Image (tube, rainbow, N blue to C red; front, side, top):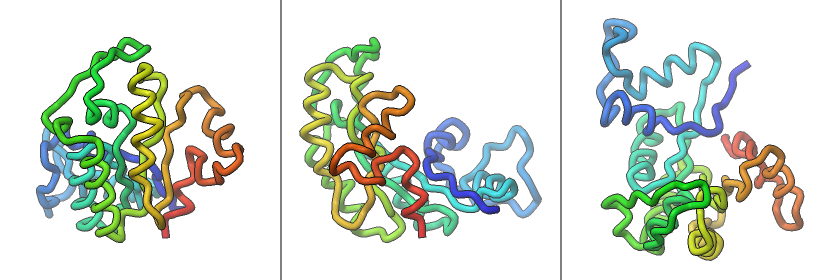
Length: 201
């Protein structure tokens, strides 16, 4: 039975093996062990074991742009885009050490304001019909201090737009948290951690 992978980050995988990932697949068969895999290679390997479609999730600005292009070029891919809660904190200029000890590591992309970053996400989601969900976004209290939590609570929901399902990140990463959130009034069944497969059509 075909399976849909409802949450993958191929951009992260390819960043480790092939900085861009757009090289065409060789006609000479599978690449040698020392040759970096392309997007097409990964999708072919997935299909060989029954994973016929994947939901590529881009949740920082470079990954949003990468996802926008990738899903347009590869029919086996659909997309989700958002500003990850940890990214939202950096775009908002918050530089506090997280409760888990994670030091902030701002990059050039974080010079873009949170409002502008969310606007870019909304523009990509509106323009590309192969972007089917907004995610991963929401709350991440495990890696945000008091100021960061306020940013996540007040700023990130603005990225959601009508017609796109939301892929929330539970505030508490412990098992069962997503299920509890899904049962809250107004939470809806799509708040569950595995709700995205229902949106792929």
